[in-house]
Image (cartoon, rainbow, N blue to C red; front, side, top):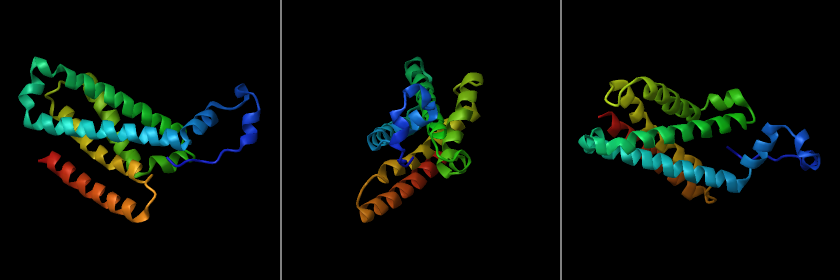
Length: 175
């Protein structure tokens, strides 16, 4: 989500006359808000991936009664991801091109099917586990935070490194 320049003459009117979408666009086009949002997404996405990988190595812990917090964590995190995606969609300048991006496809693939499977399937169900595994794709969203780095060479090297890590971690999740 790139900051958009908003005409200040619109803000001289009363706040009741400014549409909600424009108000949200002004909030979420602020560089500080974008930075905080991307940092939070990066942290939560990486934490979800780390927990998934730990889950694959110690799956008996997560299946037992002491692993109840993991399913609650996944539910809360996916609700957060869905709300964040809805805000990004609502404040996008052009809705349809935004939905056609690779990032939007990952967002949709990791939130909507998980919510459906969480409601109707057990934790041991193959498809439920498959949609938990797709959370590894969220490593790709580290690129949003990397794009805020000023130096071109460092930014491009980190993007290449992030994409390599994305491919390795996603492939390791398939195994």
